[in-house]
Length: 129
Picture 1 (tube, rainbow, N blue to C red):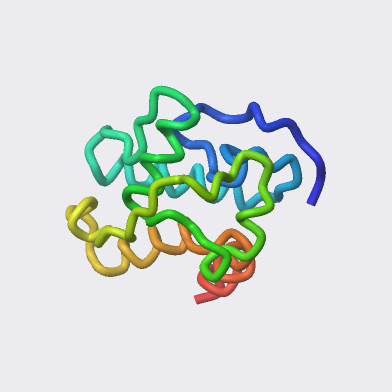
Picture 2 (tube, rainbow, N blue to C red):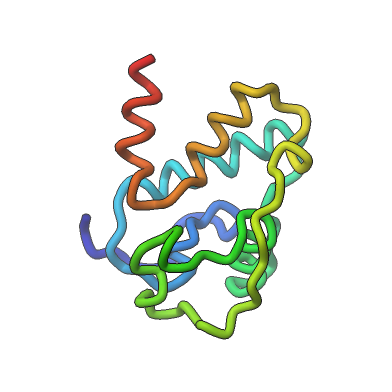
């Protein structure tokens, strides 16, 4: 991991760790963006997370994927812009949101959005098949 600025990528495709102020991230943020674009293609050009500000963006992500906690995303509470007072949303069924994808497409989409710490490893395993 390298140190970067938090002002990267178009807002709608920005990874949660970047939105939460992390300046230490890897190519996993790029894979997040790929997942957002993949979902947008499945939604016929409609973005999955069309936020109009950074806080709106993070809340749109949390409303669908659930508000992260230490169990699901170790270290999330230590990110600079994470607030323990964030609303607590439960994860939604992504198949109901992106229903145009078949089972394999949904599985692939989930890979893009899983826990940031395991994303790169899981994606490499997925691509070996």
